[in-house]
Image 1 (cartoon, rainbow, N blue to C red):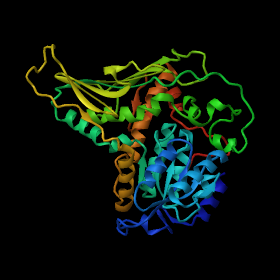
Image 2 (image 1 turned 120 degrees about the vertical axis):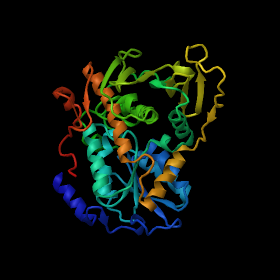
Image 3 (image 1 turned 180 degrees about the vertical axis):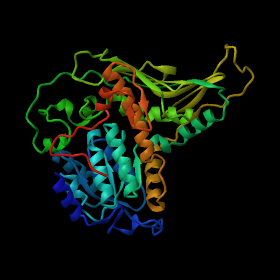
Image 4 (image 1 turned 90 degrees about the vertical axis):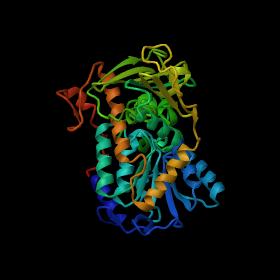
Length: 438
């Protein structure tokens, strides 16, 4: 596989780190607002295609290629793109072949989590900017490699944490930072997914026609084909993802840390399990609480599947609990819930009215990425932001899987005197796939 990788790089005419013979849109200072941007999509089934549609709303953007291991999905999406744009994109089953297409300026990585690292790094190596879905990667080790790649090859990388571009989330954080809530002693982030029920145990079965299942597994362990592990429900299996903690947690924990303006916990303790559906097919917990200790405040992550009853009547959100009031924010907007009877209540203080969302977070996120391709500035959810919050979510999962508190050394990117936990930091790739060296 390493020889294949060298051949791949040679074929794509990589000259030096970060400098390739690609369209002028990649070169800072040479791009005007009227220049065209050509994108390719890797992973077409779910959020990847939603991202592509957001790209195609932007002026001057075209789609040159689609890549997916499921030929059925690929043909369906190709027809949709042709209907939207009038042009049929080139189709690929192997992302490495797609990256050889020189007219592609930027790549959207919309694959399952275990397939984020390799396409992103390879795209950076051949001079393409990258929009990669969240969470950034399925392990902390992969996150760190991806950060190195973006820096070494001087690429613009936007992580799909689109709430970073939604104005009402930023406004909520600004209000927290104003100090008007008083001292905030705790922050809470939660996701209660009431629409999702149990996943019944299904027998293994033959690989469906048109699916390159070995390629879908990629660096993940070899497993028989099972519908539960494929497409959307991959996220409930440790081989490919981290359940709700990484799926929703990276959005909400991100803003909890942003609001508190502290980013590295002293310790993490998680507890939970399969309390709602103990005998179904999911591996990841349907109920989980993770407590992050920052020394002078605590951050609680709370998730469950099968019910919506949650904090402040919201199925998801972030709450900053202050002396004078609590600020609650979710995707619909933010509001203040004043303290009325406590010893610290501000009875005559005029609190702001509820603020609503624009509903345009994803579109604004894509627009920001395209602007940054032209200016070579950091996007709103750049690689370091995405990597850090993915690590935070993984810390919570690692504590849960070990069944005990863990202590993280951010500078060394490892757990303190904890060999067992540090094994879960690593990415264990199935041969012939190898972790990229940056």
